[in-house]
Image (cartoon, rainbow, N blue to C red; front, top):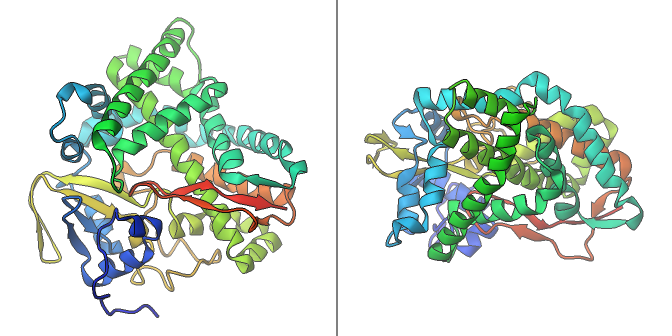
Length: 413
């Protein structure tokens, strides 16, 4: 039974090192005692109850056009410092609303149809088997770096039609963009802004020749489909390159973290791991439970375009509002025993919010689920006795509010 007594003197700064390292106590504190919380350090609202987060996703007054937050991040900087970053992200579907969002999402999502994703299962299986073959004889590995990172990167490279050998560049660019886009404790925002701007310029320079190749020689991959959409007038040239960058960034960063989170959840709950070993067909439920329990993206944010009243608090037009999916996923009003990891949980009755909701529901959720299910299945098949390697240190990736996973996850078998 969760305590409903407020913790006196508890640090409520979401980006303090303590709360980034272990946010669960803060989730409980805010959800029970201040479910709509104003954070002075971030100058933003935090919403943590499942019912309220769901309502916020549905509320058109809370917009995905999130410029105020980035403007707050770069107060006092010269506009040119971050011009390339701002212009490119402004053209991405995740920053659009209404018909403009629908139009761009429809074109960018042409490579993510259920039929296309089913065609990717063989690629996912082959890639995972190849990665496991490279480590099987060693008896231990850093799963975060040797499996969780390369699997989604190679799969997405195949889907988009870009060279998989460029994955280290994808990683460097993505880490740089994430550093600026997500709040972090003690971050040097001037340096982060400059690095993000440079990364965006490099990513555009990378994709432009690939786009030109597809103009000359059309291809059936996701990038080729977007080029065709642009040529038919359904996307602008700026939207084309901006959303190619978005798919590469979002498509591998989050799945990388979620795969490590899934494995860690199973290995730290041996009774649940045993249930899965005895009934491998439960892998889909195991993935859904881990995505609920430890989502790779704990928060997303919106900007109010009109005043909103929520639980007696006045959110003013222009305010930034963080929607706590990870906190909502542990709300006892929505999930029985929410702090218990249970792969037999019925997720048809209790919906987690880790992939968002509504028009901005994660377009890559279907691909991510297939990667996670295949990854977990083959790990358990190919590495009997898989366990955490307690002789080596684990290191969380918890440098910012919006992304959570592992930098180091040592396992042995």
